Length: 69
Image (cartoon, rainbow, N blue to C red; front, side, top):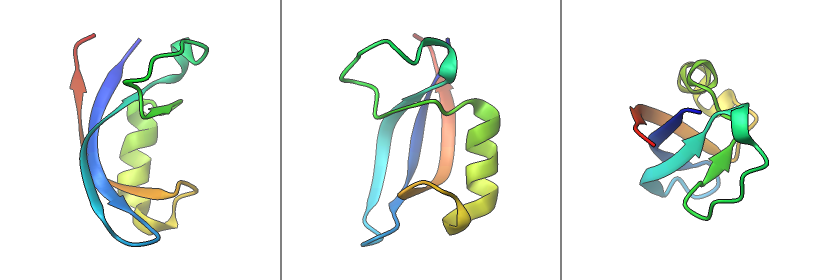
């Protein structure tokens, strides 16, 4: 299981965020309130950064880093 801390902004009002925790798809059924979004792997994050506002998410990822669990 990998977790990442992301920074970015919301598409609707462009308000910035940082320190949000996302988790890859391995443990999608785990219910943890500290997880902002389930189902984002490192490759997904790289692609989201590359796509910018053209992704299917409600937010834009500008940077990420892997964190230990």
